[in-house]
Length: 329
Image (cartoon, rainbow, N blue to C red; front, top):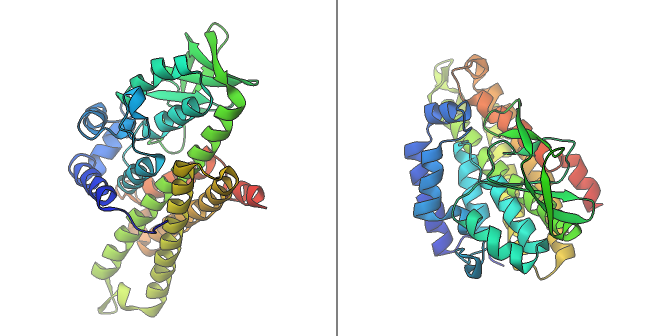
């Protein structure tokens, strides 16, 4: 594999970044996070209709773009950088679960809907919070050894620390469930893809935190000099930069292995390694962002708290760093 993006992947990242810079600035992110939908519906429509982000990892036979999970990870990295709330994480995990465990009939019926931009989610633990549970048009669940399609479930929003990551609770008491495939295969794939996706988001978050902090260190003057000129500050920023680049390499390796699918054991090893490293690096980057911004980073008006909250939430979605290290061992 090459530890660099191809020309097409670079163009994809550039297109997503350009769009998000125009449509997902700080004010837009805050507004979208607290809206009834929990995200910018117009932005999501643009991402799906004009760029096709929801269709990237869906095969062409199911009306998808026929790319791979790696391309989706590239998009997730840019979303992580912008902090924009998005249903892409939940939808891609659901799509990958369908590809891994659903029957041909279910794939033909459901994957085109996801590729077109309908929000989908999968509940791997019905006792815990589920991504986008209260706004998903397509709800899947793993019940025992079965992958089921859920209709008529009662979904309630779950308040969380990070408002840009939408969580909810599902009550299947009065719901109708239809078995559509193998739950064991679907769960295994969903857990790995979710962890790799969280790692990609975390790397993007590190980029955002580092860029914010470097910019501030260059303009904040103390003792007649920019604080970025002091060796102690340089060392801390250099450490975040080095850790971020290592996390990026680990994330790309995991995403590539999952996209290729040649060696499941290696893909699992690389995914747990990437998630462990990237999630911890995001926590470090968020901490240094707050510390090196000084007093302004503990105010509501500054975006440092958004970075901190996202780093915290990512470490809980598909396993904390120490859990991934246990899996590696």
